[in-house]
Image (cartoon, rainbow, N blue to C red; front, side, top):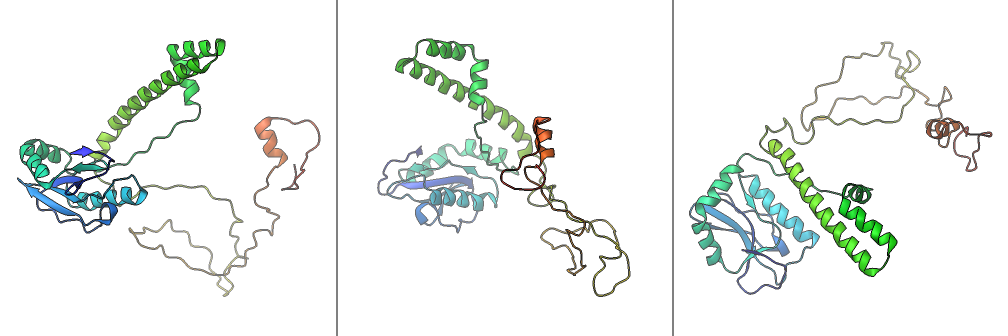
Length: 284
């Protein structure tokens, strides 16, 4: 099997992954909308489809590749292939399944009951300056470039910086993998998604008793009994009523942008009277 983006020939198959024999063929269309089928050999099967004339990393094909793997992983362990893995013929792939049966079976057993995680890395602002500060070779090249600027000096510094970034990326990938590996084999969460999701919202005028009782004339005070235990995909009980509360009745104007207090908190005491050229908020 090879990973390529070059034009394909007749009979070439696109390979999604390898799973134990007995799984159901994914119903999701594969790359370029092709139907996905299974090639079974020696207790193993490979999910494949007819390869398009040319494999390109288009968004819809990337999503189709992931969707096929998602259906397979829902049934059991899978050895996923990266995007654009091709095999010249079905016979070649079946022969590889036969020859590598023991190794592939051991790999499938090692990922059984594990989870797949998609991790995306981004460049942290200021990382290049930090990298130059920690690398003596980069610092020397930077000083040399400043003293003797020119095309060749810039190229040397750029190549050295690219190698350093690649080295740092590989180190970070190893650290991330070491941290995620225990999670992949850990117990799953009780429900899909996150266990705790907190957020901060803008303050609203509080409920006041008895003037904010519902207008139906109820006389009972508010009954606070804690948060309800709402099951997964269930809706919390609630009552919608007009309680006559006015959020501005006590002069609460909400957020005050460009306030003098905020500027003093950020920058310290400011000489002169408060200024508000854009007339947003009061005062400042």
